[in-house]
Image (cartoon, rainbow, N blue to C red):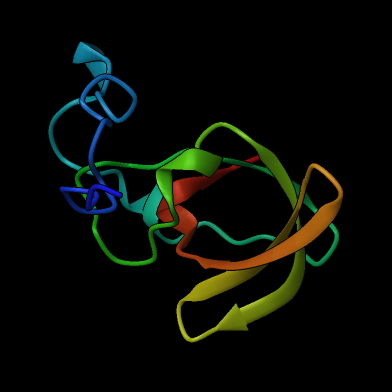
Length: 96
């Protein structure tokens, strides 16, 4: 069996690419946005911020905020086929 070459961010060249109008400085309102418990959120990776990222396979999915804050991150639960998975995600990678 061959060894897999590359890191966890391989094959994400086009998936994590930003729109040309959203490039540049980060908006602080997006960085410090707050969510309540039970809010539905979209998981969208902001490629310019490394902290609080999740595995790119889940990019574009929708989850539910279950825990308010763990440090600077939120606890988000998604359904992956027939399993529930829990992530701790920074709010820059979340949108309502």
